[in-house]
Length: 275
Image (cartoon, rainbow, N blue to C red; front, top):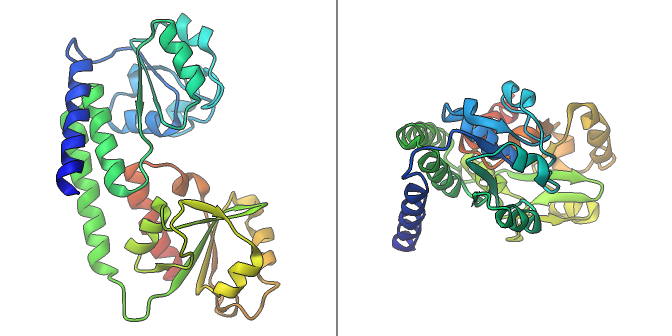
């Protein structure tokens, strides 16, 4: 499996190198928030000529001209900007991508990572694509070192506390074993209360109550956090309720497949549950 993954990554890096053989793109349109953030992390934010309404990190990204959102991009506006390349992810609307290509615009889609390892691989691909290979490799090395230190400090004990991680409330959506949230839970020294191998799945309150998790984490904007906590407090027999272990976290931090966010989210979850 390792050999196949390495071979796949090598092929992608070679393709990215071919795309940049004539020199790095000076005019980039980013059509995904994770791509925008990563380009800034690579020190190339100045090359972005436009991004989406969802691109709000870092603060400078908010000031860029907007070309719509990740599912509804403005093709005419993108064409008028004469970009060297448009970079997005697999979550972008495919029919729009096809139309961009029909207009003769170079488009590169980088997969959304479902694990820390995939996020790092995709980050390296992006670095190669925009001519920032060395910086991408340096940052990935730093992220891996930080996560290794976290993992050593938070090795799972004989009794592993279970975490129910809520990503949506109406309806109730939770993070399953196929999500990068599941990895964050694991690196934090906990176990996922959800056994299903899907990334995210619809759940019922009744099922959650039967699971009786030790900890409940709700990914939700701060202004709605107290209301959702009260929903769970209607079940006083839940271990998480009895022990006061219901927490809310910033959905922006835990929502994007960016390796730097993955590490920070892991650190945040550990700090939050250690209080």
